Length: 157
Image 1 (tube, rainbow, N blue to C red):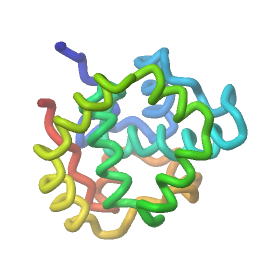
Image 2 (cartoon, helix red, strand yellow):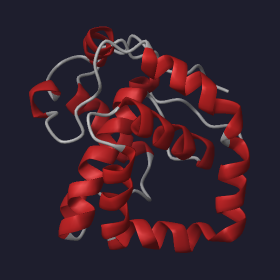
Image 3 (spheres, rainbow, N blue to C red):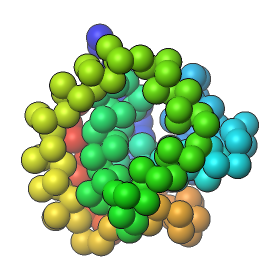
Image 4 (cartoon, rainbow, N blue to C red):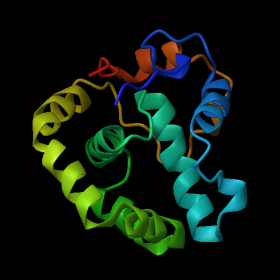
């Protein structure tokens, strides 16, 4: 499937994080914005959706898998805490129900190809991305944020 890249996905995007997040929601209309989710879903997806923008990924199954890897290796919380918060959100359980076993298997099959590369990229980061304390970055350009953290967006596959 040919997916058009959004401007927030460019390594040197001049968009602010807030503008990138707006574009992310506009370009991915099936994504439920945090203000329309349960309390647990709002907390989880506010951070998860920001991570999509900061790490330059979309919502296709491959990019969802890549985003999870970025978050497991490159956040200021543990992989366990990330998984715990995701499991607490009913919207995450709904995503997995909609995805089904076939979709989940497809995503997992794509995963090994990217684990090493994402791990290397997160090791080159200057500091981990903040899971919840990202408010101070909302009005800063993505290019500047990525330079500060040492985030290298994966090229389009």
